[in-house]
Amino acid sequence: MKSFVKRAEDYILDIIKSLGYDVDKVILNVSSRPEFGDYQYNGVMELAKKYKKNPIEIANEIVSKLQDNENLTNINIQGPGFINISFTNESLIEYMNEISGDLDINIDKVKSKKILIDYGGANVAKALHVGHLRSANIGEAIKRLARTLGHDIIGDAHLGDSGRPLGFVILEMKKRYPDLVYFKEDYKGEEEDLPITNKDLEELYPTASKKAKEDETYLEEGREIALKILDEKSGYHHLWKKIIELSKNHIKQIYDLLNTNFELWEGESDAYPYINDIVEILRKEGLVYESEGALVIDVKEETDTVDVPPFILIKSNGGILYQTTEIATIYSRMKRFDLNEIWYLTDERQALHFLQTFRVAEKADILDDTKLYHYGFGTVNGPDGKPFKTRDGGVMPLLTLIDLVRQETYKKIKDNITDENEKQYIALLTAIATIKYADLLPYRMTDYTFDINKFSDVEGKTGPYLLYSTVRMKSLIRKAIEQNMNMSKISIIDNELEKSIILNIINMSQVLNNSLNNRSLNEVCEYIYKLTNSFNTFYANIHILTEQDETKRETYLALSKLVLDINLKILDILAIKVPDRI
Image 1: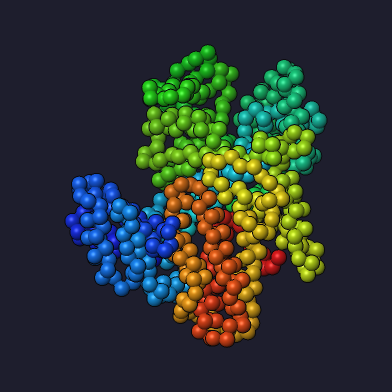
Image 2: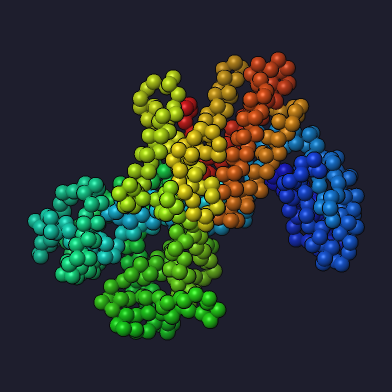
């Protein structure tokens, strides 16, 4: 099935083609001048230019055909050839009842592709910080949106679980716990519980990193351990695995708070078995050469407007970099999954890394028809306009930000909720909604300032406003059910407030598709605010439950239930959970 607007677009497309004009598609835009119509078609000027005709003449031809459609009204031409149309109340009512039974009708599915989305990017043995927020939020929402529109999606956390940082962590553990079985020279595969918690683990890396900057011997020992990790028979390797497991469990708990779920929990280290193979492929292709003891690949192209340095495959000491595991990960995914595309969601500052990696993958001819895309995003800033930090100037842990917002949202919970556990749970859900909506509202590439007071306000364009409004809709429908009120169908449109809600509803499909095309949730966030706001205006001016006219009351309730269903659908795409009450 097609959405209401898509049906209208296809109908107009057929008319234009029947008039002898070659056109691929018709796009109806929401009118900025409602007095002229609900929607506007702006493609006439392009046709006039192509066929060297007067645009008004073409517009009149199209309009004369549109007049025959009994579902259209107020058809007119404005300016040099903009065609305005409105839909009859009868056609809108019929469609509202149609999608009340199946909301998916109001979603225009796309041609399905198998897509792996690489997002999250948490580093093992380090605290998740505010810098990880956008990847988790944007990646999860894009994954859910793509799945809603029909794509087959795999989400991978792609943990940073290897390299020198883990070597430093293990070295610091060796200094503190030298008697651990994993440090025995004649290690035989014995197992021993870790003497540390995740909190201890997160303290180890900054301590070790500071020592490495001040002590060359410590630095070199950490590098050596990072290489020993790769030896599956060594105690270092087994200790490394236990550290990964400890840290991963904690990382999962934080992602669970953000309602971020991955189908794959793989990391850089999962690419290790494929490194030798990809290096051999690159050698055979004649792409690899030695430079100052390292193995590198040139990826610069003549058309580049910025400097693109060589891709470092193997360091001079035989070690591997993030780039090496990245290209091996792509090769691994090509071997294991039948993918049409891979999408990477990371900070825009990693754009050069992905440009280099994608070019190596293309040169190596390992992609078949799989397409690679990097979708960057801006930073979350504090009140000073710089990346969000703690008061002492350190990078703010993500749990700290969540707790700060939770403290603020707790203050706004109604006094009639007396159970403390419930209040804390509602405060947490509201805090997550606050963070997510504020994070997804700007265009993906835009830096934004996180204002806790502003974003946690229950009024305005905020997550709490959406939660409070949706909970109110839930309460309304619950009361109607308790009173055995009928809400099975919409029969009339007797005021402009209803019409405004309905027009917002039929815009949903375009918004979802536009957002996916842009790989950004800003349009979806604007849409749910606009729909919710139109409902709240309706709710404030119409006495729904006490309406004496049964036909009107049934219509009001059916429309309210439809808005509730859409809100729940959109909030789920945004990965925002809705409590039963606030």
